[in-house]
Length: 213
Length: 350
Image (cartoon, rainbow over all chains, first blue to last red; front, side, top):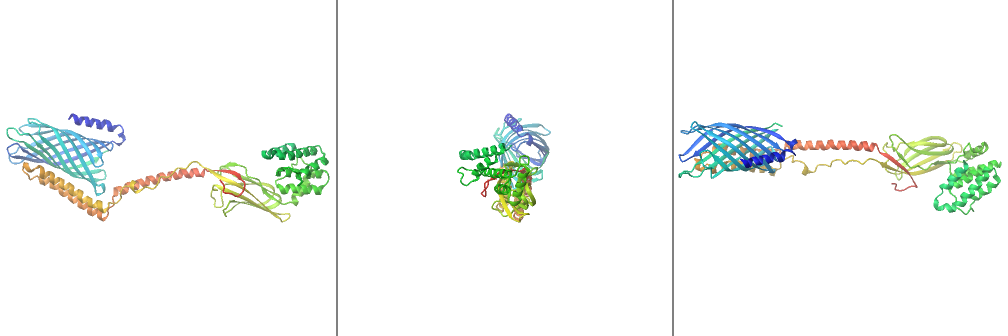
């Protein structure tokens, strides 16, 4: 969390002054069909549902950007599985290091709540996004990979390994961009009492980026 | 007044030949003093010495013309009118601009001089004075002369070029100034180079003809011009069409996204029950179709409208900039000042 804040602050301070005239704001409402799977030693529990949200991105010149996202939705459990609500608030700074590559650092706070209780997640990630233009630049293929080295979950020890990966396409139409993306987060928790907890969240997301200024 | 004129002639002589001319100027000065004191009989031998072929010292054209003129004046006073006319004619032939100041010479001298002018026909052009002329507001002035009434034509032409620009055609009697606006026959500003002003005259009294010419150089004084922006080379323009190879790569990229989606879904879900592929399939299918469609569309007509528009915008900006540059340059060229200087004869010019 602290690292992401430092990176975000450096991005703002370093990029804001010279690029004030190039500052642009983009908002992207999104809708996801997400599936949450947990195996805590009692078999795989699945819950599926829509998530709505949006991402606001403030770009400081051609290289630096700061994005804030807010998501929320309900995941409906399969047979015998509790329904749960999910909400997330995150911030991410990115630096374009090559025309096709950007590096990101971010942090997020996520909460799952059921009628039995509430679980909070804190996620810190470092990742990269590769974007390759095709169809003359009107379409971009996107690949993302993020390591989540610092994840804390209330009531659980942090996972041994966690990552998020995604791929998709972005279609540019005038000043708007329509994106479709498949993403997957994976968390492998350490075994406790001989039981290893595995958890993942996958989503098919549609988002529409609108450039405001 | 006359001593001053003689002193000016003496002073105008080149320094290098000053010693050789010293005797001529000295003798001319003595003759003039005798003339002023009306000692014509003493002045005449001195003046005759100067114009004699046996005179050992250098005599400038101006000194010779002055000597002939005063010989004529002296002989008029001595009552030898025919001889006076001959000497006046000699002066006029050597310098058609020769004239007698009515305030300094007697009516008889003026009449005799007029008779000499009527009997002698010559045209001449006064050497061009160095000048800086803005053709928009001023003119280059030439002075031509005909010793008596004559039909005169003055034409100007670049040395070595055939096209001539008529400057004057008409009857003159004596000296006349003609103005040149700096334009040639094609109404364009005279380019830098050497020019010739030729004057041809035909006497209305005797029918004889004469001609004269003078050379001068023209240079342009113009504010430095700006360069226009060069044509875009291909590297500075965005590609406006997608190549066949790029179209094929689009298929690969689409398939790459599709493969990544399937790989993510397949690899990560194995120990969580599988059956995850549905949403990944959507993205994979979309990517694959997109790649194939992009390939098919661009193979047919691979125009990239955004790049075409961007290039057109860049070209328009460049054209606009160049139009402004050309406008400013045209204004500067229109404000060209002509620098005119005398030249010795035909040559390459400045």
